[in-house]
Length: 462
Image 1: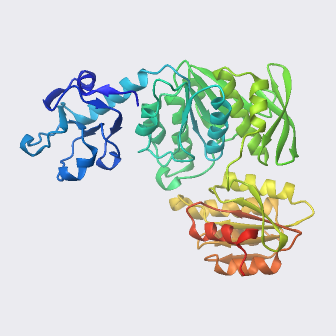
Image 2 (image 1 turned 60 degrees about the vertical axis):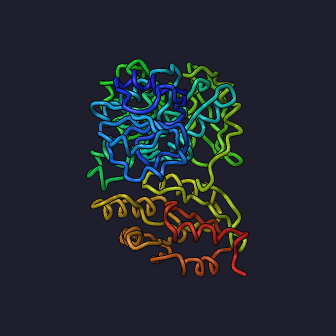
Image 3 (image 1 turned 180 degrees about the vertical axis):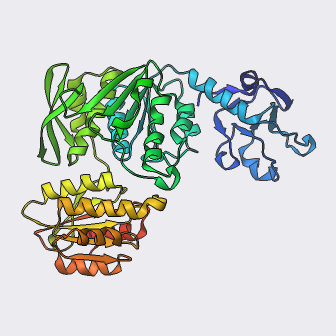
């Protein structure tokens, strides 16, 4: 955070000093007590503070509040700034702070691929720029204050992942970061428990259009069906399309599987470039196209970007190939699960599993609410369409996937388990050196996480 004095905060929020000194210097910000982790923090709050002693280790502390504290109870090392409405003062400070920095800020959303795309952009830019970015997939609505304040005088670019748990989440994130470049990787079906319907989820993702600077850039997957349903006419900035279609400004063709990644030709401004991106699957090419477009808009050349992309280190548990039990190959994709990412994983399994016995171990898809049955049925349809040699589901709701695949006539052994205890025993019996096992689930699923660890070669039962 760019340091400010309490006196400067008073001017920014039109406040009044009622205790303490204007000279105390602020290095951190918070709007909840539990967000206070350091000394010299400014806290915006309307809450009553009962136990001042619990905050003693964080003094000096500055509080911006609309509450009338009893000053005889407030410790000397606490500066109190009184305002009319604490929440309004908080947002005045946020808007002021963001306006201090005229730097490229990239915001990324999508049902799948957003973390990988964000990491690609961060990696590509970090050689030339001091970059701040969201940490892995930590993108909750409560995290954006700290991400905003991680921008300081030395920051030259920022890359933030903006997820959707509910409608308004992207608008909330935009209030903090005010991106100059926005990316929508794709829109599948997720978080329907809060978005209520697929249309609601699409519109929630479409909030990206509203938060990007009107003179900025919006990068979209031209071939994603649900993204095509968004009203792009209300965006007055530059729209960039990526994909395989000839209408795309960043077009990929001649896509092939290479060693540990994807080879493809990129066509941009009527010039063709040979590129390689680590990580398997056509979806990885789409992630790369979005990252390339963003980096080019920030000022890097295509050859520079292509060279850096070669050494990008793909993320663990995202279609990660590892040695497994009985000499088998494990395709670990236990970062998250949606129907969009499931289809991508199965396509990779089909391609790299040629001439091998292909086993899919699939967990429950979460955050679906009343849409759970329908989406799990769709997952079963996807598996039936692409095909595997054995299907194993884990979890009470995941059995819907297996049932649907059977109903559609899938002609392979199909098993359903409520947990992973018996799955390991089954895999140990059927897996050999000619087997490739896709394990696909959510990082928060204990059963999936434990099984993925257990079937690694180095974690076999003695």
